[in-house]
Amino acid sequence: MKKIGITTSQMIMVDSSLCGNKKTSVNTSYVQSIQETGALPVLIPCVLSRWEMEQYVSMCDGFLLTGGMDIAPVLYGAMPQRCGAFDYEVDVCLLEFVKLALESHKPILGICRGMQMVNIALGGTLIQDIPARSGIDHSFDYDGNIVHSVKLEADGDFNKLFEVDSLLVNSLHHQAIDALAEGLKAEAFAPDGVIEGISGPNLIGVQWHPELMREIDPLMKRLFEWLVNH
Image (cartoon, rainbow, N blue to C red; front, side, top):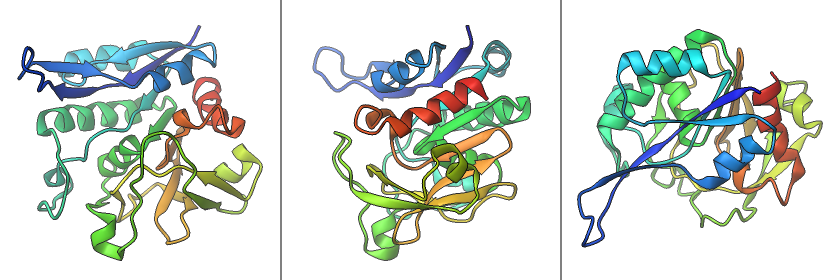
């Protein structure tokens, strides 16, 4: 049975009885998406040492980089400009982990923040707040509602994976890729031009959340199947 590492997030509790306590968490939909492929999910702590990172990279057969908070702009050489909340400690650890995962040449599926982190790890940058750039909002509620279409590049990896020219997707983000890192290819685009999908060697990244759509659109399961079977 293949083992797929799933990145986690860190939450600081505000409940009166637990205020200040830190909680490592991941949305169940990510875990279920891997379980449905027949692979074994392995949850990766969001704060860990270099040695621990190396153990997880060695142990796992592939990696699912999940969504979450914004990413500290300093990690791609920028000042905060209408950037949302971020956790610098977690961002530094995840960036180092992503670099190690990329060096392993094992398959990686990046979702939302996970795709953005791959772009940063390879030298790219982010749009910190899409509405401030274009006036268009990409951030909607978290129930997986269909929001807009994405156009897939003809004869690209996405086109071959999904066997269609376009998809209907949800939209839960206010940041996106700005400068695309060298070695990556933009594969899917929103109607306003925002990059919604990227590919690279042993790598797929999507800006939408397929883990929330797999019951309404079976095509979304192909992303997780690609990760496990690649």
